[in-house]
Image 1 (cartoon, rainbow, N blue to C red):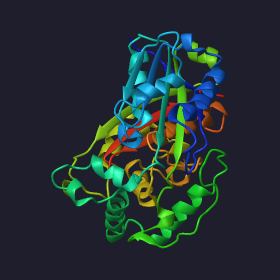
Image 2 (tube, rainbow, N blue to C red):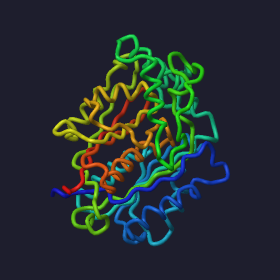
Image 3 (cartoon, rainbow, N blue to C red):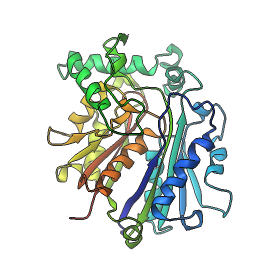
Length: 347
């Protein structure tokens, strides 16, 4: 059975440097209330719920079960969870609706990076035998990728600075950084402070709907015309860090290259990673890249990828885009990548 599925609502919290005074549930609840209010749906009207988060950030096992308090204890729900960015929770919900088991789905994700050292926490996702014992943090690994790009002649430090400035010159009211910031000192050469994402806490949520239900809930649904995700080798030593074949393959399977896209929301936490993604996705100057500011303006772990899909969908809802690309990543140096194509009805 083939079904048309759309993003019909998107909500996100402000991304803040610290939400020490809030629990994950308290951070989530306003976002969940907002996204449901946009459609008029109640908890009982949602056919499936799927979330994305990370126990490493929360510091306890099965932390997502506590976050379910934000959804509501009654009535009972059909629920699932992925231990990664919420973009992959959206993928699971999309397959659920595609199968016909539900007509609507709530997808949400959240992350609090402020309680600990994010750079150290992310080291735990590396190969446990050869890389993790060396404790190369996320910035050091991104710097290896940036230097490889510079050595290959694909970019230079001036272009990287321009990407950071453009990303943060956003009018996104939810962004953590809303103005260009100084490039600052080197954190790990060749990456300076301005080339790296801010550390922040935040949450995001979307609602999916299938077929005619989507049109009932949203004036201009953002139809998911294609979505795919691929992963590359775990070992960085066998990868070409100047390229992203997994992104390119996911884009091909999702149908990105069939027609031009007018908007691209790329999950590129480091300026150098936008260079890699633009090449893999064959984006030119005609495509507006990261009008929301992307992960360089706000990078709530486990929610930034879902936010890219939500931001792309929101622009279709508002009539600012007709065909948009959304991208999410997970793992070091763009190891795993998800690409979705969203389209609005002809105007």
